Length: 85
Image 1: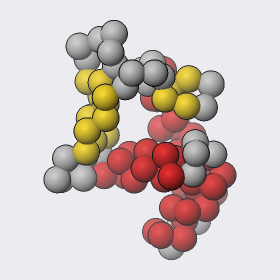
Image 2: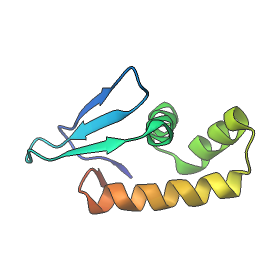
Image 3: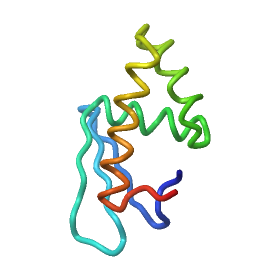
Image 4: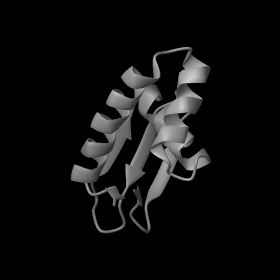
């Protein structure tokens, strides 16, 4: 998985993130959790398992729970045309 080319990503002081595609005026807003997942994926070269491990350490949370949440979120981003496989 990877972001589609040409995305514009902006993180606000609130921790929320805005993603826009070059071929659409629509924007996708992510809360603080979505922003953290995006950053973890970027830092881990879009390797889901590594991003999950990183977040589970940071949040001191169950990695399987984080993985499930990330998979759902990734599916939503894929459906929105933001991520591609």
